[in-house]
Image 1 (cartoon, rainbow, N blue to C red):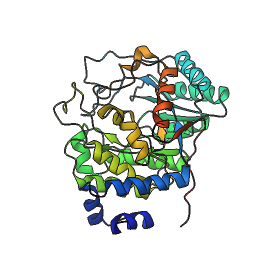
Image 2: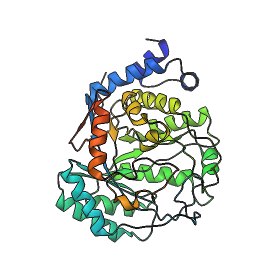
Image 3: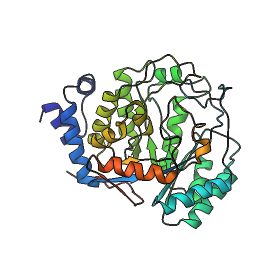
Length: 347
């Protein structure tokens, strides 16, 4: 084992200069992947957890420069799922073995706190053995607390970039990295299993920006870390920027597994979009979560964060069985399990 990978494995950390060397070259990739896979097997074996994704709305008050559902996109056909549609998705998912439901959407004020609390409480009552994950953007402490008290126990909020100067290049002036970080620390304080993460290869991103992301994650110590390649959308200011790099994304999944051996790390749909075997490669690099889509087929193409998103035409059952075969083909298995984060093993 090279000295650099050995140090990362042993100490779960490197200096900034060492991280720059590791991230700027592909010469460590095979070794990183093998070591990261060994660590994920130590914690999670060959189990891969499935999360049933329900994309409840593509309305969004924000205008992020990279996102296809930004409020300035006048071409997008907007939709909202009703309470009944959301519960139907949960029912279908439960029958297929899902024990985590992820309610994700743009920052849509139509779903006020009372509405979200009522939906969460109903899901909790109907499916008491399941985890309820929310991914609904920036909220107040009190809103997060009310969702938690209603039965939600996980929250995903990607910080996208931890560097303040980079953040303003990706977001409109009314959005700040300070508020995004405030939200993440609020979620942890309330007691959520909290998920953060960032885009790989976003416009203007440098290796130093990525190192800042790693440092922020070390400060936050999230339960879940979601990263995926930037993919351009044709109705955004970044439509002509090139997509994020597959190799760098996989490298970072392995690095994250070694820094945060206990973490829940998804192989994202975006990975599968930039490469036909992207999700399988993500699992082999150290990821241990996949998030098939439970949304009604007629709305999936409308939740268009980026161009050419995969799995927009499959029924939920088809999607589940297809993923099961694909994950098995690389030596792992999808399990019916709530999939809580593991405790860190003391070395």
